Amino acid sequence: METLIFNSERKLKTENFARIGDLSYFEGPLLSLFEDLTNGNFYFFDWVDRDQDYNRWIIYRVLPKHLLNFLNRKISHLDLFRQRPEKSVYFTDIDFENKGYFYYSAYEIESFPKNYFPNEDSYFDPEDCNSIDRIKSIIFNSFARQKSENEYSKVYHIHNLKTKTNYCNQPIGRRSKRTTSVNKLFKAIKFEDLKNSPSFDYYSKEIKLYPDLRNPVQANIKEDENKYS
Amino acid sequence: MQAKKLKYKEYLEKYKNCPTSDFIEVERDAFRWTGTDVSLEDFIPVNIKRKPPARILDDSDKMCMAYGLSMFDTLNNALKKYFKLYKKQRIHQQEHFKQDKGTKIAMINLTKNDGIADLPNKNNFGHFTFHEYKETNLVGKISDLYSVFKSNGDFNI
Image (cartoon, rainbow over all chains, first blue to last red; front, side):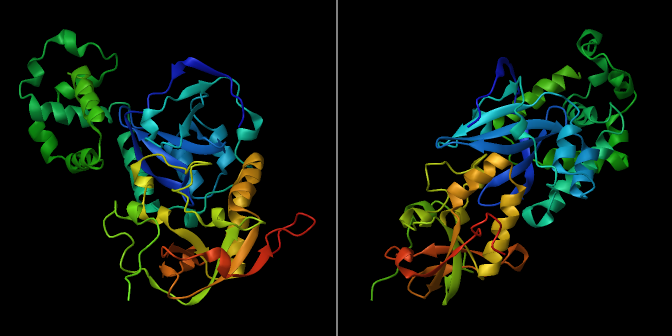
């Protein structure tokens, strides 16, 4: 297995990742799509190497529009990798105990090995994918969600409105942690208005899309609720 | 008459309806990727093998199917699927693929006393999963062995 130079100080937190589906699968996943539930970003777990004790995965972010181009075979796996929005590529080595990806640390690779680049002629093949409808549905949802920077935060905001009826009376200091104009927008929306809006069903479904959330995720959503309150 | 028991029952029991009711005893030719010197190692399900470890990201990968054996309905399908997977891998992974899956294709005539299988998947090169009975020895049932690669390294398609 390739010896990697990596930065042990720079870790990728994967405990809030939710697995969406496998884009390539044979006797186990080869290329899997995840969503970071804290910010809605998509990541690939791309199997690149193995020895007798470990399987190695590289992890990198992908944009929904590039992902869709990949699924529509407009761009190759290599193109998708090159178009990643963040230069950082992480890796994780998973041993035979196979405890689950979130138990293993993912570190940033400092010098990316040439032989870990995807093949130039490797394109998505729907025959290798066991959950194409679910994957596409979640990508389309993310387009709607990311229309503006503010949109995604509404998911958390609905939680707030459901649980905190006196939201608008929260002390200003707690709201000021966020530097964008999200809070100004939220202040103008009442829960009743949201409930009657066409978006409400969508966001409610969005929360229910991940019934198998692990406890830490729930805990972090609560933390995020506080960030926006 | 003794009830037929499946191999790896202790693992299969962990799953609900494993294998599912569509798995039935079959009489058919089957084709499985193997090493050059075929041994019992070539007939160990991926999730049982420790070295190299199975590719598992979370518990959803620890599925019933992974305790069965991958087989194909025709030699041509077995070759085509091998070719497709092999070509998609990075160069160093192609070597691993050869080591892990072998470079031969064994032809086996499965009978009802050997185990149970699902139907070949027409959308996946006639792939099907086979769960052996406890006493089955598929190595002894190999009737022919084909090479995946020609002597010049090209695919034997």
